[in-house]
Image (tube, rainbow, N blue to C red; front, side, top):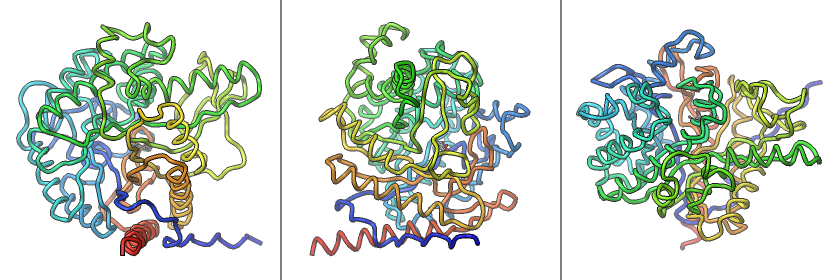
Length: 464
Ligand code: IFM
């Protein structure tokens, strides 16, 4: 007999988060906007990459996205129905500055102006990310993040966007997940620009961090406030109790976690890395480590890492792991998995937040969870609800244990184009029919809405 389905956790049974906690949802331009060549938008490195046969697994048409560019009002209405306090979207750099430098595209800037107005009209805080992976193609062709000049061009673009939106935008995100861009885009080649440079990809990390620092300066100069960055973090566990496994896991941890958070929060690279970075690194680090108003954490799952071995995964959730790496990823056994195959480990969120707090102490600014979510297919949305419930409970434990967390942005508002995975991985609270672009809220949409409602009611009661 098949066991009965697990009960749906009640949205009003969540522990109560601090008053003023921001409940949000996230999305990005390339994954949703479509309109890839409309109204003067320039091509991005991702547009060019996606157009190459075989780069997007299911051949999904990334030029259409979810049609957000024309349907944004519908999505803002969905956010309002959710009771979202904030929406994290991204601004497409090539929509605003089609050539990557030079003339600004008024129609592109006008789109974000209207989107911000629409959000404000519904009482939803706009939280734009300035770079969610769509580098203007001319800059990508000139070397992309391997070229120091890209950082300076990014700061100019940041100033343009802030000049137009800073009067209504109280929360800014410079970059999304520089680790993934470095690893997937420049080291392994699974993502645009498809480079396979392995450790020679490190300059891409440094130049993104420099771009972040220069953009913080440009944003502040343009009157923007509430500036943060979204960095991916995963607890890394050693696959075995040997020196080799521990060393491999330590290296992986450094490369994917601290290579980014250390320079941002301490002004230093992890030991041994400063000498591998290009340029006047000492001066750059002073720019990179300017004070932030908050720090964004994207969390999906922990990683189990050991010394390279025949049983190491040669592919992890679609990510090809080439031979010759000094570590090997292993399967985490005995836990639920999402449709993507990612292990579901809510405690990992608690663990990583306490690790960040322990490592950086008072240097860690208030935290927002800028992404957390899961991909499931089909009409049964209970696994997504269980995922959200488990992760919010783990997050609440981290708050109770002293981590200053101010907000949570579920990834994602709607299903969207999951980069090289195409349309097959559905992360949304809202289902997208990719033929008609019709939006249909899932059960998790109603659950999150009710959870937000219950949280607001509980904090209002505690104020009375
Ligand atoms: O869809 C992505 C997002 O663009 C960046 N963070 C991880 C998500 C899920 O893979």
